[in-house]
Length: 175
Image 1 (cartoon, rainbow, N blue to C red):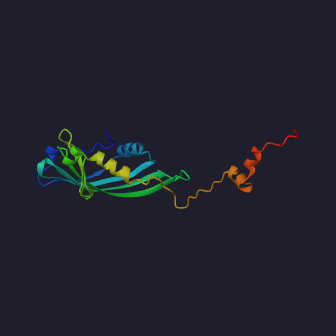
Image 2 (image 1 turned 90 degrees about the horizontal axis):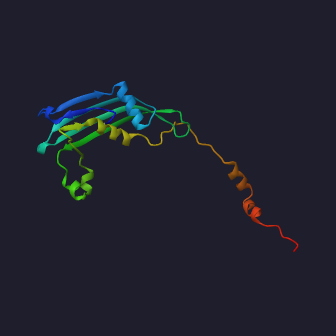
Image 3 (image 1 turned 45 degrees about the horizontal axis):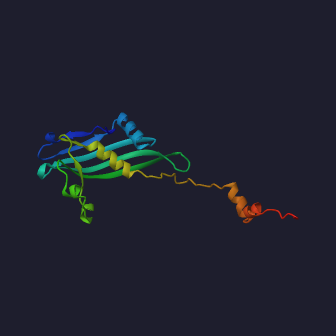
């Protein structure tokens, strides 16, 4: 189960479509932050439209806008960021020919992603989670953060480049 229980029964979507705006509750935002392994999801608004298509398919289009707080990879201080992510998915009850054959083409990159309709229900919350996962900065960094670290061993080696070889040399014995 995803942290966002935002599902819709296909039978409840009228022929002209359904326009929806969902705002994550504090509990949903907390669960989402835990799943994403970030400090917090401060705001999450999904504006989307579900539109019936031929062949029992359902199109999902819209945007996800979020404000999140992550840890700086250098200082571990909080770093706030804003996400604006597009939604463009087609839910289908039958697998595509490419899914069955394992073949695809470059034209597939321009077409919307296809997701399954499971038990007559589309899981928009899972799609929002996936988009946020891919949209987060993998290495958030405060603008003024700098990584200044030196290893004392490296400094010693830099001063005397042959010091390690000198330690390996055995003293000559008079024998």
